[in-house]
Picture (tube, rainbow, N blue to C red):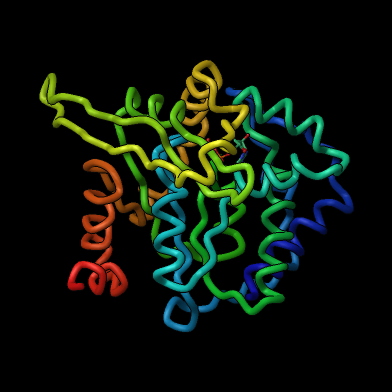
Amino acid sequence: MAAVQRLLRSSSVAAAGRRRMATSLAPGQAPAAAPAFPFAGAERRRRPAHERNVQWVFLGCPGVGKGTYASRLSRLLGVPHIATGDLVRDELASTGPDAVQLKEIVNQGKLVSDEIIINLLSKRLKKGEEKGESGFILDGFPRTVNQAEILDGVTDIDMVVNLKLREDIIVQKCLGRRICGQCGKNFNLACIDVKAENGLPPIYMSPLLPPNNCMSKLLTRDDDTEEVVRNRLRIYNEMSQPVEDFYQKQGKVLEFDLPGGIPESWPKLLDVLNLEDQQEMKLAAA
Ligand code: ADP
């Protein structure tokens, strides 16, 4: 994947000569200037869309369900689902030099610096490239305009899916999130049942309950407390809303208002994407 090489090269060129940037980006803080990841000399060749797998980006507030729908689509389309939040959590679980500092940033709901994120993403893409991966669905990246510009500098994004849900529901969903400490699967204990009001439609989302053997091993992410969730939403609106505008200007955004939980939303999403889930169709016909 030529794009991976370009991202890696830009990242390692930068690593050699740049000044060290702060580990986190405070709201309102000016993003790192683009030259922090220089592309001078980087190969500019881009593979046209028909010669490669899809290159999509999922946008949306924390907890909206990017991971759920991006991973389903990645299985359907046979492309990797790359979530930078997962890359950050893997780094936190390691004994790497940045782990302690990163934990503090993530647990406050702040963004990790563009430099660290680009390096984590580059490593992940390189590993995938070695395994013969092609295409991707990015989830949680780009989260700043600077990251979007860097990505644009190395590869073409075909489409940006922007998932939307009312903020009061997002908070409930985040507080209900659990992960099984053993198998790593994600669940949600929240039962969302909001009546129609002020012209907004009713919305029902059933909980995604774990099987019995996961029940006693459920963990809550340290950054899924109400205070941190609200902080993440505030930072999203400040730093990531402009990313939506960035892609809007390119005419690449597909806006998708989640109508409910997975049973209501998944078929509708497939419909607007003009895709079919053969597996689900087989199950429905059985
Ligand atoms: P969310 O539920 O907020 O979408 P994620 O799992 O995507 O959470 O990310 C968890 C944390 O990892 C974020 O709050 C942030 O600290 C860090 N992170 C993930 N992706 C990025 C990114 N692209 N830029 C900066 N920080 C990121």
